[in-house]
Amino acid sequence: MDDSVLEPLEQYNNKFKDLHNQNTIIYFDNLVKKSGINIEENKLTIKKYKESLAKAEDKRSDLSKIRVFRTVLLLISIVLFIFAFYLFFERSFLGLGQMPSILIGIGLIVISILILTIPFKKMGKRIKELKNQENKFMIEAENFKKQAYAQMEPLNRLYDWNIASELLEKTVPLIQMDQFFDTKKFEYLQEKYGFMDNNDNACSTNYVQSGSIMGNPFLIINTFNQIMVNHTYQGSIVIHWTERVSDGKGGTRTVHRSQTLIATVTKPKPSYFYDTILVYGNDAAPNLSFFRDPSGTKGEDEKGIDKLIKKGEKNLEKQSEEAINEGKHFMLMGNTEFDVLFGAHDRDNEVEFRLLFTPLGQQNMIKLIRSQEPFGDDFKFKKIKNLNYIMSDHSQRFNYHCEPSIFQNFDYEAARKFFIDYNNDYFKGLYFDLAPLLAIPLYQQTKPKEYIYRNTIKSNITSYEHESMANAFKNYNFKHPEAVTEQILKTSFINKNGDVDHVRVRSNAFKAVPQVEFVTKMGGDGRIHTIPVHWYLYEPVYKDTEMEVSNMNINRNYFQELNQNSDFKNCLAELGTNGIIYERGLVSMLVNKELVQSDIEKLKKFMEKDGK
Image 1 (cartoon, one colour):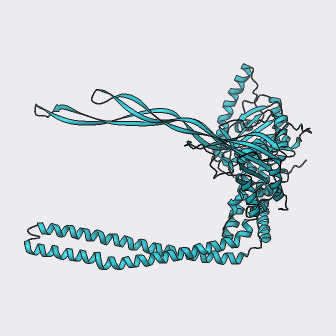
Image 2: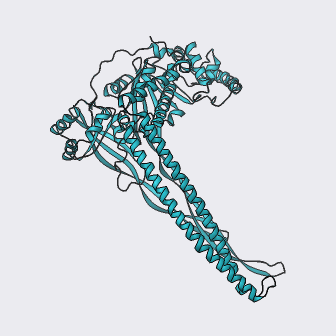
Image 3: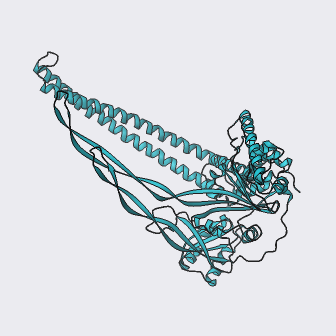
């Protein structure tokens, strides 16, 4: 048994945090060495680039000052013109008489004209010069940027998928990460633990990362989801009427009044959001289910947490008494601090709950929950028999997809900083999603029983990966032409031809049909008025696109080379391919028709070259 992560919080702070940072730096430096880029040359180019940008900014600043000054002069000129015309119609100005006033007015007009000619003409020339100089420096900066990109291209080409997961595995060997979520692991989770396929038409897999801890499988799943929410539409009309009111002198007078009448209607409207969840399967405590929410300790100091615990202990005693009287399962643990902070008061098997949370497990969990760094208690924990679900606030804000393009940069120093920061954040975020599981010693002590694969999965690639690959076509128009909302992409497996899955991608979206609802409302004139409220009825629309997915087992660098190969491009055109992408060894193509075996063989001839 590997006991190196039996105290996850201490191990992160005392070992893994610094170790991962060192591993990340070494990994990046090795990539740089392999790329053969000239770092000093790039630094010099970036220096020139920034200098040109600074010069352009200086010229832009000078331009702004001159334009402000020109505006002030224009305003002064306008004021002088207005005052001059005033003097022409004024018989006397300060007792000077009509003629002196006219002469002063003429003088002001002359001054105004001079302002609009001599200074404006000179400033116009200066503005033109500054614009040309700004453009010159911007073009110069852009050329330096292109030069810097060319210098960094050998490094940019080496970034591949799974970099972050490889580094995590190196830092904590206990955690094994997969290249992609394969069918064997899916079958294992499905048949052994009851993990279900994603059949929800309002939920699409954006990306998925699978792995295991001591052979026990886990998944990080990011989904794009659609729900219907109530949306309030507003309409209004303005009404007018007259009234007779007292004039205060014993009579009456007529007054005109107006009022804006506002009406609202509430109708369903689709709303979209991303969601990230960790799923973990383990044979330990197979009959236990529970749910816990964050305890509320996040952001609290030690005194605040102790106060929360004392208040919680009183509530627990009352809850325990009620449970005994009602014959329910809930029984207090000996460690009430754990019971208050962890919660899970809906647990349905006290014996297995105690087997899971030994004294060490309780202490680990307490430390994790009380700690304010790096995230505090921001996680939900749901266990349903053999499946565990962790959902944390911090993972909702982080992208674990690790797309290689995020690392690409023209500035070596910026690229190095981002690479190190992102991978440290990736490790920190995923580690603390796994930490509540690592805090339970029994989970690390329980190895899965041998499973005989039944080959019940008909496809080569899981439906989760099918959807992930479909969502990777970010710029492709899957949408129905009438759709006005976001889209949920769902895939359905049609058949497989050797190593290639033929899949249908359905885009589920909505069109908006204009509607009007008339609402009646009493006005200040004492009458009932009808107010039109315009709203939209959202009706579902869908569009189907066919896609081929296969594990070609090549790397990103070789795939990029293929995309520059004219023979490969011609082959794609002949096959009627509308688009092709690569992710984590998987290749996906949008096609007009299902590829036959001879088509697949043509593609494989390109893919089977040694691209590693």
